[in-house]
Length: 327
Image 1 (cartoon, helix red, strand yellow):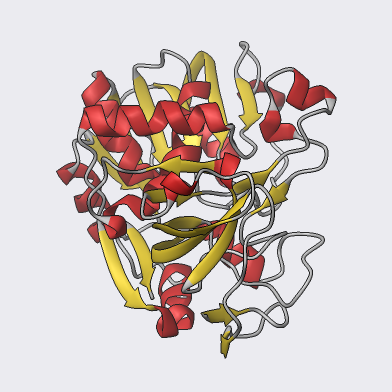
Image 2 (spheres, rainbow, N blue to C red):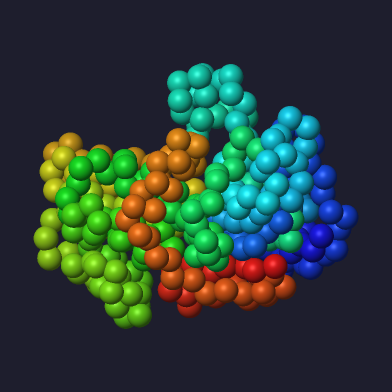
């Protein structure tokens, strides 16, 4: 197999040839058709997440076809298109797993972080953690759904019945959520980097009723704000933009330090919450919604060998939508 490998944090990925991996009991092997690049991949390669052990193959927005199964996995899965996301394994017996909160499992494994991921021609997955994608004919278009879509959906669910929704950081997750919000009859207010007129135009093309800089006040108070940009200074800005009783949801796995702010921003029962990982139930629910809503992802495809260029483009904000690696 061919893979782009992180041998040391902060260093470019290196192309390597390895023996094709063989699935163990309960596992299957996916021949990768496409793997999206998520902002979390930047946090991995830049060393912003703790307990990373190298070498590691990043990538957790995997779409491909099953080409080999281990003992205990139905052979009928061979040839089926499946998706693999961030959550690669949970213990099943800790207090969180026993109460349907496997996203908070005490002993999880994460694709592309604590186990090898999809920046490769093949990847091994626990068969219980893949999603069937038979109804998604385009693997490149489907790849962003496996994390940007999944974690975005969990973040939106955390916003409850909010009618006016602010999206801070209009990247892969937000461009999917804007479509879902429009389908659900919500109003979307998109916040981008100052001066990013391309992202603002993209947001308006997807149904946002307003798009502007994250430093601006929206034209109407928000019921909820979802933050996907890993920028701690956005939190007080978002709190100041939501109504009394409003909620600010942090959807990322990493964020820069949050500055101090006056208690008046939190008073009146405003809430600040985070979203961590996802459950498989989230995934099944979201994929059903994505089909019903007719989600169209905007993608830029790169050959697998250009993973470093794709990561650089994402880091610099040169992309609209999602970057996808194609082996």
